[in-house]
Image (tube, rainbow over the protein chains, first blue to last red):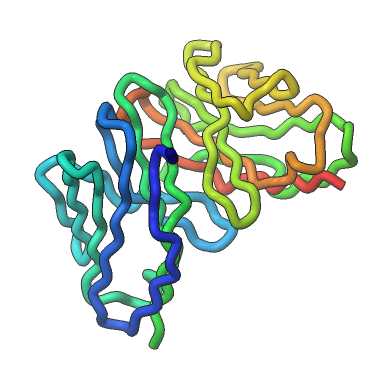
Length: 110
Length: 114
């Protein structure tokens, strides 16, 4: 079973739409969670950390559900510039490596 | 803003040749990492490095790979005898400390093995 699983998409949405992605993880010892964004042929860039109580950064909201072992990312009022692949990242405590999901591709259309 | 820098941006090599990919991590960071991403696939962890030694490595990081911090600033990944399937984007990352600390990625080196 994969450490981290994501729906590859693509999610095709119009500008202004609200879109949500989920990501499931298999290791119950997972302790830290992040969403990264990757543009085509570029490096992953941190979008936001995911905290146990959920957190918001502008149009972006991240949630963690430990019981069901998934994290989510909600994007409100989508912009064209949000078009990218969103990578779910999980680390297991005390291990110095990140497990990346395969990414979910988002296309925001005018 | 401090950043991780990688050179070269693109490396072309013949199968069987040795390549060295170079990275300069963010200056106050103590943990260093290499990842690879084959075109169209996910980012895969290769190795983490702390205090001048490997702290974790994946199954991908076999005997043909090695890492080194030859001086106070550079962090290198050497592939001894490249194979066609080594063609990928190689990302270096660094973090202030290990565990749950955020990793910052360099722009990557695209390795093309012919």
